[in-house]
Image (cartoon, rainbow, N blue to C red; front, top):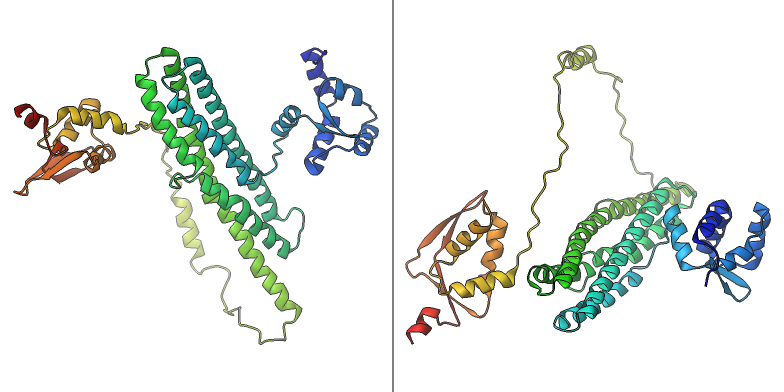
Length: 405
């Protein structure tokens, strides 16, 4: 139990921030704060705060040494933006916890409502922690890569090659696989599956409180999906090319250094082509005059930076399949798709039309093509589609046929 007031602890953190920062740096570097190092830091700042560190529960004793408690360590890590890269294997643990909670939520929708609510909240917490770990890794790797590119620490070219290769093999590529939604066992793919489930439950769950929790989790998953896409783009479009460029440049420079150590071992390649020319063109005056004349009558330019909003639509396969079964038999499947989408949207998107058309591949539906080769025209927002006329029944027997029998 902490006897001190919260404001007293906050004032202590503010008043001795420089001391605590040195302690944080030491633990980041060594994983522990040895008593000798703590005394050196205290002597450097001419203070002794060891009693308060223990009393306010900022320190935890490890034998004769100490360490910052995780809560305070995370606070300094966040304030100073000093994140240590986490191995992707450590991030993958979230797949197990997220998957287990998701299974229990699915199996317990008809069980105790209080337990279900707590599981949804715990799942939300695990998803948040997972994204924060990914974000910290990306930030730190990007910072380290830029420092390596600028060679801030003046390290040898061979060491740059080794370090760049190490980051690619053990951090960047494994982390990219975690964020790849096309990988069936990736966490990003699992989050997509959970979002489909939450979207259904937030619309039709009977209990109002639980329905609101599903609504919160669904909105969180939509935002997390967008944020993960941004992190994936940083890895794919910025970080990986940067590291590859560092490695390639270092290999080339290393090769030149080896060559220059013994340039007469082999015949020197002709790498320079000599050419004579003037530093400026004969027509530079006229070209320059023409360039500046185009700005004499400069027109006003207006840039609209508003990003158009786009509709986030998730195909609710189960709901549309139920609607189709209730409409059986359907004599023209594609026309049925067009009419149902027209009821929901002012204009039909081609993507939505093709998503709804995927119901044709369900095993429990009987699909029959027209023997006469009849076709139907479907108008979408950007296209005119010519599709075959297809009849759909259920298990080979339509509702009408069952009624007649």
